[in-house]
Amino acid sequence: MALGSVLLEILQRPTIGDVLSEILIFVIPLWVAVAVGVLVGWAWKPNWARNLSREMLLDSKVSKEAKKEGEFSATTRSSVIPSFNILKFQLPSCVSWVADDGGFQKDSLSVPPTLNSECSSSKMKKEKPDLVMEDDLEHLSKLVEVTDGGPAWIQMMDRSTPTMSYQAWRRDPETGPPQYRSRTVYEDVTPELMRDFFWDDEFRAKWDDMLLHAETLEDCPTTGTMLVQWVRKFPFFCSDREYIIGRRIWESGRMYYCVTKGVPCSSVPRRNKPRRVDLYYSSWCIRAVESKRGDGQLTACEVMLFHHEDMGIPWEIAKLGVRQGMWGAVKKIEPGLRAYQKHRASAAPLSRSAFMAQINTKVSADYLRSLERRTSGDMLEIESQETPEKRVGNNIPKFLVIGGAVALACTLDRGLATKALIFGVARRFAIGRRM
Image 1 (cartoon, helix red, strand yellow):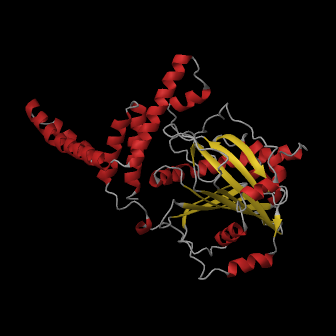
Image 2 (cartoon, rainbow, N blue to C red):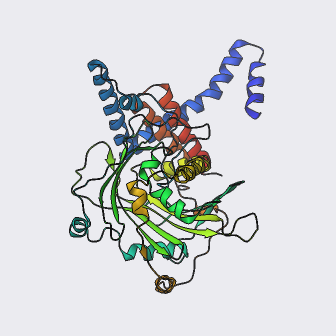
Image 3 (tube, rainbow, N blue to C red):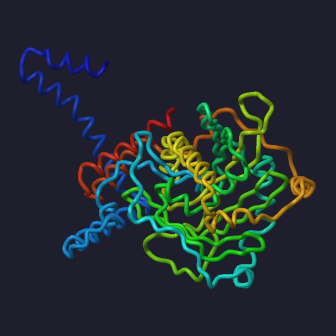
Protein backbone atom coordinates (compact mmCIF):
# COMPACT_ATOMS: atom_id res chain seq x y z
CA MET A 1 0.00 0.00 0.00
CA ALA A 2 2.84 2.43 0.85
CA LEU A 3 4.51 1.80 -2.52
CA GLY A 4 1.22 2.38 -4.34
CA SER A 5 0.60 5.68 -2.59
CA VAL A 6 4.12 6.90 -3.44
CA LEU A 7 3.65 6.03 -7.12
CA LEU A 8 0.25 7.74 -7.12
CA GLU A 9 1.80 10.93 -5.74
CA ILE A 10 4.50 10.84 -8.42
CA LEU A 11 1.95 10.46 -11.22
CA GLN A 12 0.00 13.45 -9.90
CA ARG A 13 2.88 15.87 -10.57
CA PRO A 14 1.81 18.78 -12.80
CA THR A 15 4.29 18.23 -15.65
CA ILE A 16 5.79 15.20 -17.41
CA GLY A 17 9.27 16.44 -16.54
CA ASP A 18 8.44 16.40 -12.84
CA VAL A 19 7.02 12.87 -13.16
CA LEU A 20 10.13 11.58 -14.96
CA SER A 21 12.51 13.20 -12.49
CA GLU A 22 10.62 11.73 -9.53
CA ILE A 23 10.60 8.28 -11.13
CA LEU A 24 14.35 8.47 -11.73
CA ILE A 25 14.95 9.44 -8.12
CA PHE A 26 12.78 6.50 -7.09
CA VAL A 27 14.33 3.91 -9.45
CA ILE A 28 18.04 4.76 -9.29
CA PRO A 29 18.55 3.40 -5.71
CA LEU A 30 16.92 0.13 -6.78
CA TRP A 31 19.30 -0.27 -9.72
CA VAL A 32 22.26 0.59 -7.51
CA ALA A 33 21.17 -2.12 -5.06
CA VAL A 34 20.82 -4.64 -7.89
CA ALA A 35 24.27 -3.76 -9.24
CA VAL A 36 25.83 -4.15 -5.79
CA GLY A 37 24.03 -7.46 -5.33
CA VAL A 38 25.31 -8.74 -8.69
CA LEU A 39 28.90 -7.73 -7.95
CA VAL A 40 28.92 -9.13 -4.43
CA GLY A 41 27.05 -12.25 -5.50
CA TRP A 42 29.49 -12.90 -8.35
CA ALA A 43 32.45 -12.54 -6.00
CA TRP A 44 30.78 -14.80 -3.43
CA LYS A 45 29.72 -17.39 -6.00
CA PRO A 46 30.35 -20.76 -4.27
CA ASN A 47 31.69 -24.02 -5.72
CA TRP A 48 28.25 -25.64 -5.75
CA ALA A 49 27.02 -22.93 -8.18
CA ARG A 50 29.86 -23.73 -10.57
CA ASN A 51 29.15 -27.45 -10.31
CA LEU A 52 25.47 -26.78 -10.88
CA SER A 53 26.25 -24.78 -14.00
CA ARG A 54 28.49 -27.55 -15.35
CA GLU A 55 25.78 -30.18 -14.75
CA MET A 56 23.17 -28.16 -16.63
CA LEU A 57 25.53 -27.44 -19.52
CA LEU A 58 26.35 -31.15 -19.80
CA ASP A 59 22.63 -32.00 -19.80
CA SER A 60 22.07 -29.46 -22.59
CA LYS A 61 24.93 -30.93 -24.64
CA VAL A 62 23.59 -34.47 -24.20
CA SER A 63 20.11 -33.41 -25.28
CA LYS A 64 21.39 -31.70 -28.43
CA GLU A 65 23.42 -34.77 -29.40
CA ALA A 66 20.42 -37.02 -28.79
CA LYS A 67 18.27 -34.82 -31.02
CA LYS A 68 20.79 -35.00 -33.83
CA GLU A 69 20.95 -38.79 -33.61
CA GLY A 70 17.18 -39.19 -33.43
CA GLU A 71 17.40 -40.93 -30.07
CA PHE A 72 15.50 -38.47 -27.95
CA SER A 73 14.57 -40.97 -25.25
CA ALA A 74 12.33 -40.55 -22.25
CA THR A 75 15.35 -40.22 -19.98
CA THR A 76 16.80 -37.41 -22.12
CA ARG A 77 13.45 -35.63 -22.16
CA SER A 78 13.20 -35.73 -18.40
CA SER A 79 16.62 -34.08 -18.05
CA VAL A 80 15.89 -31.35 -20.63
CA ILE A 81 12.27 -30.33 -20.10
CA PRO A 82 12.16 -28.02 -17.08
CA SER A 83 10.30 -29.52 -14.16
CA PHE A 84 8.82 -27.05 -11.71
CA ASN A 85 9.09 -29.54 -8.84
CA ILE A 86 12.28 -27.84 -7.69
CA LEU A 87 11.57 -28.68 -4.07
CA LYS A 88 11.24 -32.43 -4.61
CA PHE A 89 14.22 -33.48 -2.53
CA GLN A 90 14.50 -36.84 -0.85
CA LEU A 91 14.29 -36.76 2.92
CA PRO A 92 13.57 -40.27 4.08
CA SER A 93 14.09 -43.17 1.76
CA CYS A 94 10.46 -44.14 2.39
CA VAL A 95 9.24 -40.71 1.30
CA SER A 96 8.83 -39.85 -2.36
CA TRP A 97 8.77 -36.06 -2.54
CA VAL A 98 5.61 -35.14 -4.38
CA ALA A 99 4.26 -31.63 -4.70
CA ASP A 100 0.86 -30.80 -3.25
CA ASP A 101 -0.59 -30.37 -6.74
CA GLY A 102 -0.39 -34.10 -7.44
CA GLY A 103 3.18 -34.56 -8.59
CA PHE A 104 4.01 -36.34 -11.83
CA GLN A 105 3.76 -39.77 -13.34
CA LYS A 106 6.17 -42.64 -12.79
CA ASP A 107 9.14 -42.61 -15.14
CA SER A 108 8.70 -45.18 -17.88
CA LEU A 109 12.28 -46.39 -17.53
CA SER A 110 11.96 -47.67 -13.94
CA VAL A 111 13.80 -50.96 -13.74
CA PRO A 112 12.50 -53.69 -11.44
CA PRO A 113 15.06 -55.06 -8.99
CA THR A 114 16.93 -58.20 -9.86
CA LEU A 115 18.92 -60.61 -7.74
CA ASN A 116 22.46 -61.58 -8.51
CA SER A 117 22.30 -65.34 -8.17
CA GLU A 118 26.06 -65.57 -7.74
CA CYS A 119 25.96 -63.66 -4.46
CA SER A 120 25.88 -65.62 -1.25
CA SER A 121 26.05 -65.11 2.46
CA SER A 122 29.62 -66.43 2.56
CA LYS A 123 30.68 -63.93 -0.10
CA MET A 124 29.03 -61.11 1.82
CA LYS A 125 30.76 -62.07 5.05
CA LYS A 126 34.10 -62.33 3.29
CA GLU A 127 33.95 -59.02 1.41
CA LYS A 128 31.89 -56.86 3.79
CA PRO A 129 32.10 -58.21 7.33
CA ASP A 130 30.90 -54.93 8.89
CA LEU A 131 28.06 -54.10 6.51
CA VAL A 132 25.40 -53.56 9.21
CA MET A 133 26.43 -54.56 12.73
CA GLU A 134 25.32 -54.46 16.36
CA ASP A 135 26.69 -50.92 16.71
CA ASP A 136 24.05 -49.80 14.21
CA LEU A 137 21.32 -51.36 16.33
CA GLU A 138 22.72 -49.59 19.39
CA HIS A 139 22.75 -46.25 17.58
CA LEU A 140 19.18 -46.64 16.35
CA SER A 141 18.00 -47.71 19.80
CA LYS A 142 19.50 -44.57 21.32
CA LEU A 143 17.88 -42.42 18.65
CA VAL A 144 14.50 -43.97 19.46
CA GLU A 145 14.95 -43.35 23.19
CA VAL A 146 16.46 -39.87 22.59
CA THR A 147 19.65 -40.81 24.46
CA ASP A 148 22.18 -40.50 21.63
CA GLY A 149 23.76 -37.31 22.99
CA GLY A 150 22.98 -35.18 19.94
CA PRO A 151 21.44 -31.70 19.80
CA ALA A 152 17.85 -31.08 20.84
CA TRP A 153 15.14 -31.88 18.28
CA ILE A 154 13.10 -28.95 16.97
CA GLN A 155 9.49 -29.70 16.08
CA MET A 156 8.55 -28.84 12.50
CA MET A 157 5.11 -30.31 11.93
CA ASP A 158 2.10 -31.97 13.54
CA ARG A 159 -0.61 -33.03 11.06
CA SER A 160 -3.18 -35.80 10.79
CA THR A 161 -5.87 -37.41 8.65
CA PRO A 162 -8.66 -39.78 9.78
CA THR A 163 -6.38 -42.80 9.28
CA MET A 164 -2.92 -41.36 9.86
CA SER A 165 -1.09 -38.92 12.14
CA TYR A 166 2.32 -37.39 11.52
CA GLN A 167 4.86 -35.43 13.55
CA ALA A 168 8.30 -34.28 12.40
CA TRP A 169 11.40 -32.76 14.00
CA ARG A 170 14.75 -31.48 12.77
CA ARG A 171 18.10 -30.75 14.32
CA ASP A 172 21.33 -29.24 12.99
CA PRO A 173 24.51 -30.94 14.20
CA GLU A 174 27.76 -29.00 14.39
CA THR A 175 29.06 -30.95 11.40
CA GLY A 176 27.15 -32.77 8.70
CA PRO A 177 23.77 -32.31 7.06
CA PRO A 178 20.49 -31.61 8.89
CA GLN A 179 18.97 -34.61 10.63
CA TYR A 180 15.26 -35.44 10.64
CA ARG A 181 13.06 -37.43 12.99
CA SER A 182 9.42 -38.31 12.36
CA ARG A 183 6.66 -40.29 14.03
CA THR A 184 3.86 -41.63 11.85
CA VAL A 185 0.93 -43.72 13.09
CA TYR A 186 -1.18 -45.65 10.59
CA GLU A 187 -4.52 -47.14 11.56
CA ASP A 188 -5.33 -50.81 10.90
CA VAL A 189 -1.82 -51.89 9.88
CA THR A 190 0.34 -54.57 11.49
CA PRO A 191 4.05 -53.96 12.20
CA GLU A 192 4.93 -56.96 10.04
CA LEU A 193 3.13 -55.57 7.00
CA MET A 194 4.69 -52.15 7.50
CA ARG A 195 8.14 -53.74 7.77
CA ASP A 196 7.64 -55.62 4.50
CA PHE A 197 6.17 -52.54 2.78
CA PHE A 198 9.26 -50.41 3.32
CA TRP A 199 11.62 -53.27 2.39
CA ASP A 200 9.79 -54.40 -0.77
CA ASP A 201 11.74 -52.74 -3.59
CA GLU A 202 9.71 -54.52 -6.26
CA PHE A 203 6.47 -52.99 -5.01
CA ARG A 204 8.11 -49.66 -4.18
CA ALA A 205 8.44 -48.99 -7.90
CA LYS A 206 4.63 -48.74 -8.01
CA TRP A 207 4.31 -45.91 -5.47
CA ASP A 208 7.71 -44.20 -5.18
CA ASP A 209 7.97 -42.07 -8.32
CA MET A 210 11.53 -40.99 -7.52
CA LEU A 211 12.89 -44.53 -7.68
CA LEU A 212 14.32 -45.16 -11.14
CA HIS A 213 16.22 -48.37 -10.45
CA ALA A 214 16.54 -50.86 -7.58
CA GLU A 215 18.73 -53.94 -7.59
CA THR A 216 19.77 -56.41 -4.91
CA LEU A 217 23.51 -56.89 -5.20
CA GLU A 218 24.00 -59.36 -2.34
CA ASP A 219 21.99 -60.84 0.50
CA CYS A 220 22.54 -63.11 3.48
CA PRO A 221 19.80 -65.70 4.14
CA THR A 222 21.09 -66.15 7.71
CA THR A 223 20.94 -62.60 9.07
CA GLY A 224 18.72 -61.02 6.40
CA THR A 225 21.41 -58.44 5.63
CA MET A 226 21.11 -56.99 2.13
CA LEU A 227 23.26 -54.88 -0.14
CA VAL A 228 21.12 -52.95 -2.63
CA GLN A 229 21.65 -50.32 -5.28
CA TRP A 230 19.16 -47.53 -5.84
CA VAL A 231 19.06 -44.79 -8.44
CA ARG A 232 16.73 -41.94 -7.56
CA LYS A 233 15.35 -39.13 -9.69
CA PHE A 234 16.32 -35.57 -8.73
CA PRO A 235 15.08 -32.14 -9.92
CA PHE A 236 15.99 -31.05 -13.44
CA PHE A 237 19.02 -28.97 -12.43
CA CYS A 238 20.76 -31.96 -10.78
CA SER A 239 21.86 -35.33 -12.03
CA ASP A 240 20.17 -38.41 -10.58
CA ARG A 241 21.65 -39.90 -7.43
CA GLU A 242 22.95 -43.41 -6.82
CA TYR A 243 22.84 -45.12 -3.42
CA ILE A 244 24.67 -48.27 -2.33
CA ILE A 245 22.73 -49.29 0.77
CA GLY A 246 23.37 -51.89 3.44
CA ARG A 247 20.29 -52.89 5.43
CA ARG A 248 19.25 -55.26 8.17
CA ILE A 249 16.37 -55.78 10.61
CA TRP A 250 16.42 -56.68 14.31
CA GLU A 251 13.29 -57.91 16.12
CA SER A 252 12.45 -57.52 19.81
CA GLY A 253 8.99 -58.91 20.48
CA ARG A 254 6.92 -57.20 17.81
CA MET A 255 9.22 -54.18 17.59
CA TYR A 256 11.34 -54.01 14.46
CA TYR A 257 14.57 -51.99 14.25
CA CYS A 258 15.25 -51.47 10.54
CA VAL A 259 18.65 -50.02 9.66
CA THR A 260 19.55 -48.75 6.19
CA LYS A 261 22.72 -46.79 5.52
CA GLY A 262 25.18 -45.99 2.78
CA VAL A 263 28.12 -48.39 2.56
CA PRO A 264 31.24 -48.55 0.36
CA CYS A 265 31.17 -51.04 -2.51
CA SER A 266 34.22 -51.50 -4.71
CA SER A 267 32.42 -53.96 -7.00
CA VAL A 268 30.14 -51.18 -8.30
CA PRO A 269 32.32 -48.54 -10.00
CA ARG A 270 31.53 -44.87 -9.58
CA ARG A 271 30.18 -42.91 -12.52
CA ASN A 272 29.77 -39.22 -13.22
CA LYS A 273 26.06 -39.80 -13.62
CA PRO A 274 24.24 -40.77 -11.57
CA ARG A 275 26.29 -39.21 -8.78
CA ARG A 276 26.81 -41.50 -5.80
CA VAL A 277 25.65 -40.40 -2.33
CA ASP A 278 28.10 -41.68 0.27
CA LEU A 279 26.68 -40.15 3.45
CA TYR A 280 23.24 -41.68 3.82
CA TYR A 281 21.32 -42.86 6.90
CA SER A 282 17.63 -43.79 6.97
CA SER A 283 16.45 -46.10 9.72
CA TRP A 284 13.19 -46.69 11.56
CA CYS A 285 11.58 -48.46 14.48
CA ILE A 286 8.19 -50.08 13.89
CA ARG A 287 5.79 -51.25 16.59
CA ALA A 288 2.10 -51.76 17.30
CA VAL A 289 0.34 -48.98 19.24
CA GLU A 290 -3.18 -48.32 20.45
CA SER A 291 -5.66 -47.06 17.89
CA LYS A 292 -6.82 -43.47 18.20
CA ARG A 293 -10.35 -44.85 18.24
CA GLY A 294 -9.74 -45.40 21.93
CA ASP A 295 -10.89 -49.01 22.05
CA GLY A 296 -7.72 -50.19 23.77
CA GLN A 297 -6.72 -52.40 20.84
CA LEU A 298 -3.19 -52.35 19.37
CA THR A 299 -4.49 -52.11 15.82
CA ALA A 300 -2.40 -49.10 14.75
CA CYS A 301 1.27 -49.09 13.73
CA GLU A 302 3.87 -46.50 14.73
CA VAL A 303 6.90 -45.75 12.56
CA MET A 304 9.74 -43.73 14.09
CA LEU A 305 12.01 -42.63 11.24
CA PHE A 306 15.49 -41.08 11.47
CA HIS A 307 17.07 -39.73 8.31
CA HIS A 308 19.98 -37.66 7.07
CA GLU A 309 22.07 -37.60 3.92
CA ASP A 310 24.45 -35.39 1.96
CA MET A 311 22.96 -35.19 -1.53
CA GLY A 312 25.45 -32.62 -2.82
CA ILE A 313 22.82 -29.87 -2.58
CA PRO A 314 23.33 -26.81 -0.32
CA TRP A 315 21.78 -27.71 3.01
CA GLU A 316 19.76 -24.51 3.34
CA ILE A 317 18.10 -25.10 -0.03
CA ALA A 318 17.45 -28.74 0.86
CA LYS A 319 15.91 -27.69 4.19
CA LEU A 320 13.62 -25.26 2.37
CA GLY A 321 12.53 -28.02 0.00
CA VAL A 322 11.89 -30.44 2.85
CA ARG A 323 9.85 -27.91 4.79
CA GLN A 324 7.70 -27.00 1.80
CA GLY A 325 7.10 -30.52 0.50
CA MET A 326 7.05 -32.67 3.63
CA TRP A 327 3.32 -32.96 4.33
CA GLY A 328 2.36 -33.37 0.69
CA ALA A 329 4.89 -36.19 0.40
CA VAL A 330 3.81 -37.97 3.57
CA LYS A 331 0.17 -37.98 2.45
CA LYS A 332 1.21 -39.80 -0.74
CA ILE A 333 2.68 -42.76 1.17
CA GLU A 334 -0.60 -44.02 2.61
CA PRO A 335 -2.26 -44.84 -0.74
CA GLY A 336 0.78 -46.98 -1.55
CA LEU A 337 0.49 -48.69 1.83
CA ARG A 338 -3.22 -49.45 1.38
CA ALA A 339 -2.52 -50.82 -2.10
CA TYR A 340 0.15 -53.03 -0.58
CA GLN A 341 -2.36 -54.32 1.97
CA LYS A 342 -4.65 -55.39 -0.87
CA HIS A 343 -1.72 -56.88 -2.77
CA ARG A 344 -0.74 -59.05 0.18
CA ALA A 345 -4.36 -59.98 0.94
CA SER A 346 -4.65 -61.36 -2.60
CA ALA A 347 -2.14 -64.10 -1.68
CA ALA A 348 0.30 -62.84 -4.30
CA PRO A 349 3.75 -64.45 -4.04
CA LEU A 350 6.33 -62.60 -1.96
CA SER A 351 9.04 -60.70 -3.76
CA ARG A 352 12.64 -61.52 -2.91
CA SER A 353 13.11 -58.33 -0.91
CA ALA A 354 9.87 -58.86 1.04
CA PHE A 355 11.01 -62.40 1.81
CA MET A 356 14.34 -61.05 3.10
CA ALA A 357 12.45 -58.57 5.30
CA GLN A 358 11.12 -61.53 7.27
CA ILE A 359 14.63 -62.78 8.17
CA ASN A 360 15.33 -60.83 11.37
CA THR A 361 17.95 -61.02 14.10
CA LYS A 362 16.09 -61.49 17.38
CA VAL A 363 17.20 -59.57 20.47
CA SER A 364 15.65 -59.41 23.95
CA ALA A 365 14.22 -56.35 25.65
CA ASP A 366 16.90 -56.72 28.35
CA TYR A 367 19.60 -56.49 25.71
CA LEU A 368 18.10 -53.29 24.33
CA ARG A 369 17.92 -51.81 27.81
CA SER A 370 21.58 -52.62 28.32
CA LEU A 371 22.35 -50.67 25.15
CA GLU A 372 20.45 -47.67 26.48
CA ARG A 373 22.33 -47.78 29.79
CA ARG A 374 25.61 -47.29 27.97
CA THR A 375 24.66 -43.71 27.24
CA SER A 376 26.10 -41.17 29.64
CA GLY A 377 23.95 -38.12 30.23
CA ASP A 378 20.30 -37.32 30.51
CA MET A 379 17.64 -37.49 27.85
CA LEU A 380 17.59 -34.48 25.59
CA GLU A 381 14.66 -32.13 25.61
CA ILE A 382 12.50 -32.12 22.49
CA GLU A 383 11.62 -28.52 21.85
CA SER A 384 8.05 -27.73 20.89
CA GLN A 385 8.96 -24.98 18.45
CA GLU A 386 11.94 -23.52 16.66
CA THR A 387 13.55 -20.46 18.22
CA PRO A 388 15.11 -17.66 16.15
CA GLU A 389 18.57 -18.10 17.63
CA LYS A 390 18.71 -21.73 16.46
CA ARG A 391 17.87 -21.01 12.88
CA VAL A 392 20.82 -21.74 10.65
CA GLY A 393 21.66 -19.14 8.05
CA ASN A 394 20.81 -15.96 10.02
CA ASN A 395 24.37 -14.80 9.58
CA ILE A 396 24.03 -14.72 5.78
CA PRO A 397 23.08 -11.20 4.65
CA LYS A 398 20.08 -10.95 2.40
CA PHE A 399 21.98 -9.06 -0.31
CA LEU A 400 24.40 -12.00 -0.59
CA VAL A 401 21.51 -14.40 -1.15
CA ILE A 402 19.87 -12.22 -3.79
CA GLY A 403 23.20 -11.31 -5.38
CA GLY A 404 24.24 -14.94 -5.56
CA ALA A 405 20.91 -15.81 -7.17
CA VAL A 406 21.41 -13.11 -9.81
CA ALA A 407 24.91 -14.37 -10.57
CA LEU A 408 23.75 -17.97 -10.74
CA ALA A 409 20.83 -17.12 -13.02
CA CYS A 410 23.11 -15.22 -15.39
CA THR A 411 25.66 -18.05 -15.37
CA LEU A 412 23.17 -20.82 -16.16
CA ASP A 413 21.51 -19.01 -19.09
CA ARG A 414 18.73 -21.58 -19.37
CA GLY A 415 15.85 -19.22 -20.09
CA LEU A 416 13.22 -17.45 -18.05
CA ALA A 417 11.84 -20.55 -16.33
CA THR A 418 15.19 -21.43 -14.74
CA LYS A 419 15.87 -17.84 -13.68
CA ALA A 420 12.39 -17.51 -12.17
CA LEU A 421 12.89 -20.65 -10.13
CA ILE A 422 16.29 -19.55 -8.83
CA PHE A 423 15.02 -16.09 -7.91
CA GLY A 424 12.01 -17.66 -6.21
CA VAL A 425 14.11 -19.95 -4.05
CA ALA A 426 16.48 -17.12 -3.14
CA ARG A 427 13.58 -14.84 -2.23
CA ARG A 428 11.91 -17.51 -0.09
CA PHE A 429 15.24 -18.28 1.58
CA ALA A 430 15.91 -14.61 2.37
CA ILE A 431 12.38 -14.02 3.65
CA GLY A 432 12.43 -17.27 5.62
CA ARG A 433 15.40 -16.04 7.66
CA ARG A 434 13.22 -13.27 9.10
CA MET A 435 10.28 -15.49 10.01
